[in-house]
Amino acid sequence: MLSHIHIRDFAIIDRLELELGAGMSVLTGETGAGKSILVDAIALLLGDRADSSVIRHGAAKAEISATFLLADLPAATAWLEAHDLALEEEECLIRRVIADGRSKGYINGSPVPVASLQALGGLLVEIHGQHEHQSLMRREVQRETLDDFAGHGKLLAELAGRHRDWRAAREELERLRRQSDERSERLGLLRYQVEELDRLELADGELERLDEEHARLANAGRLLESGSRALGLLYEDDEGSASSLLAHALAELESLRALDGSLGPACELVDSALIQLREGAGELRGYLDRLELDPQRLQWVEERIGAIHDLARKHRVEPAELTALGERLRGELEGLENADQRLDGLDEEVARLAEAYRATAAKLTRSRTKAASRLAEGVSEAMNELGMPGGRFEVALEPLADGEFTLHGVERIEMRVSANPGQPPKPLAKVASGGELSRISLAIQVIIAHSARIPTMIFDEVDTGVGGGVAEIVGRKLRALGADRQVLCVTHLPQVAAQGHHHLQVTKVRGENVTQTGIQVLEKRRRVEEIARMLGGVKITEQTLAHAEEMIGNAG
Image (cartoon, rainbow, N blue to C red; front, side, top):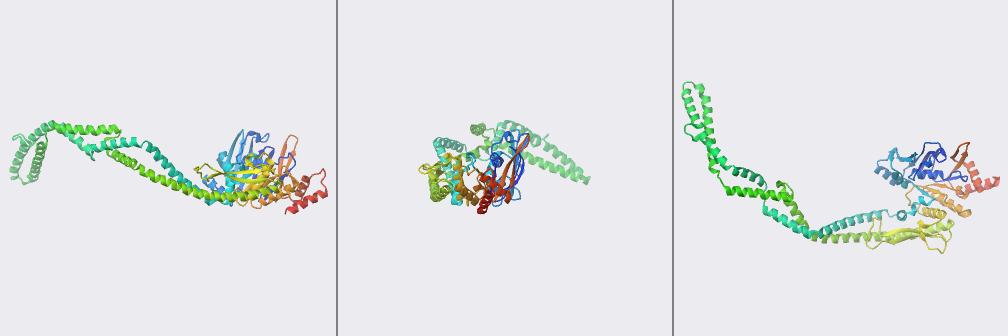
């Protein structure tokens, strides 16, 4: 609930600090004193449009802040947590500053856009009085009001889940059907591409091996010529080969070894070198024996490498990626070839999910129909008590087009009212009289008080156009509403004011060059005097005071 409000330099308010409690608080004052300024300030705090005209004359800026207690308000708490604005304490501080035609909003000290003030404010306060403040004018709120009254939370969650499942399956079905329209053309292309890749029969690592073979075949003449010359230098030239020279050197060393045994290691190393040289020469001879000049093989290798590169360029991939490309294309081909079977199965799935949605939606419709009847009966009765004899209220369920599914069911909810006997009910949004609209809203709120989600309700002049006994009934209804929620009521009727749990008086003070509005909490004696003033008369008599005291006593 709203526990504290601070206003500075707003309209004709210089500075105001006000503590508010639970129950029904009434706000009264002389005509023109500015009773609605507090309502305007709260509306501005919670996201109403602002301009520099709201700044008190002579001040640089206007500032409004309020503290809300969040105990037993899970929706508001969840919103704050979702936006990383929650405090450890179960309270929320909202602040708005208007300066130079610009405004800044803050929630728990963090700057936020006006849209955030509106979103959170919609969970904390509902203002009744003028058309633009009537959330019940909006169809989505009318639907939520009926569903809250009927306790449809779990049923709506079930319906929303079924709607999500059906929509996901339907979207997949539509996607496959769109693909199916192009499937024949795509299938032909995929089959040709896969066959072309299959004909290539590219093996893993084949291109690397072909590159090596091509390098060898293309340079076979040079390899033979240079390899033969190297073989002669190493071994096959009888007089000048490295093998012959190394053998002669070893023979000389062996003869010297007989004279000096320390030459043994040198002899062994030279002997080992000679052995390795002969083995190397043998390997080279074998290589040269295997090496052939094969122009036909060279031509085939070149054609094979060319075919691989041509196909890679055609598909705009690297040659090494052709194998992976073939796997992807085969997978897509297989998927398209099985699409008909998938379409048939998905058709059945969508139909099954649609039927499940319809069953849950039908259950919701039946429950809404019963709840609408109960709500209409209760509100109609309350309207008659509130000075609208013969008035009739109804909640209409308008079926959507066949096959139109929404998260909220298969019907639109519209609240309708006939303010006078014999007139057909009209949509609540088209009720012309602001006073009638306020009383209808009051009647609805009294009936749904046990299920409403908004903890603080503000009624601005809801008693317009009523008096006498009806005014007292309006006051009783507001007081009854205050038993469950916080109610702030701006009124000019003593019958309504006497019903309040708390009484606030608005006064206007005129100085030499300034006019200011103030609000004070009235204690018992001052409250009796204010009710007596509201009862009328130039002079407040003892009889008027007694009447006022009696009215307050009867309210308790």
